[in-house]
Image (tube, rainbow, N blue to C red; front, side, top):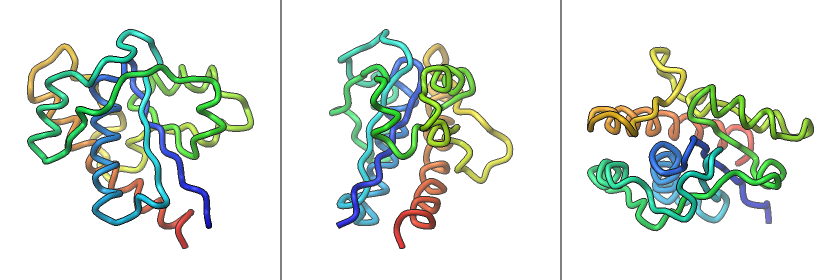
Length: 161
């Protein structure tokens, strides 16, 4: 039996963007009946919110799309994440740079921007909605949904034959 493909979504505090990305992708994986071969997680580059649930606005936005992220808890990226996860997906360039600084050379090819998988040339990063209004969370949802669909295409192409 093939080992599970491991996906890690990363933002700064792990309470808005990365849990929304994990929830959206996790639901897509379940809908496609691929839970047996894909595992998800999320983390932050900073330890601001360790052990806390996702931001209430992130939870509400996800719930509007029938995605439940209430079970997720913030954690910080650990050194062994780079060897454990096949995809380490940063929400923006700042977090990508932090990840690349701490990532061992052998695993650098696993670290990418999440929106590299989206087919939307207007955005290359998932903006942090924390200090904004509802429209920021709605934008994050639409971006992570598009990138999740593209990521699943990539996984099917390169790992599920």
